[in-house]
Image 1 (cartoon, one colour):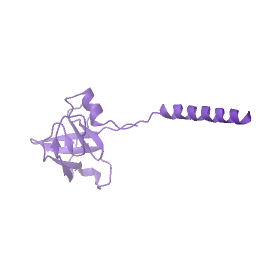
Image 2 (tube, helix red, strand yellow):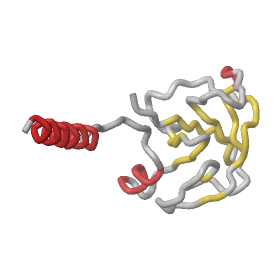
Image 3 (tube, one colour):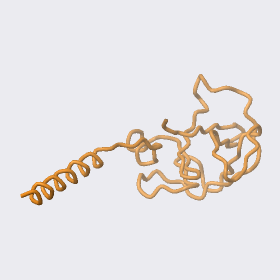
Length: 132
């Protein structure tokens, strides 16, 4: 009899643990699929697993950005939501050079809050979209 209660209690405990763990939610950074499903015309770049959005025309954007070290270039222009990879962009052409901000003292393993692009004589500012 005790063994039956022990087995039943153990099974019930495992079911509760499984249900609780299945409902746990985690906060993660938005990905290209999320952004493009909400706004198919979004101007975004993905770099080191982080999506950056063009914020050049926002009123709150501070001025004084200057291009620093070259960090890479766009390898593909695409607006597809699936299989969006690092160095892909929705609006920038393949071969567009990406820069760190001059004041950031960029190291290749470092997170960048902004990426700069020179296009048609204008400096474009892309800001990281991060949660938390």
